Length: 93
Image (tube, rainbow, N blue to C red; front, top):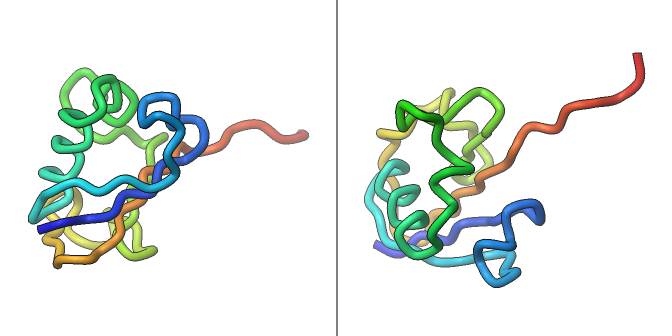
């Protein structure tokens, strides 16, 4: 099934500066793998060395964080939207 993925500006250098891309997948892990296959280098930003999504990367399905769902095993429906957002750090203390 076709899934739309939102790409934040910091990652768009891998997607020819596209804000949204479409990939195939029936669950979040398949979509992330398809994203990496279609746009080499994305996997290095999304996954850690153990091929897990690290804490500083937030993945959402239709605006719900995957940790509140079923993680990367979260099943998707045709037309769902996935967003891959790096956590922001900084601010004043």
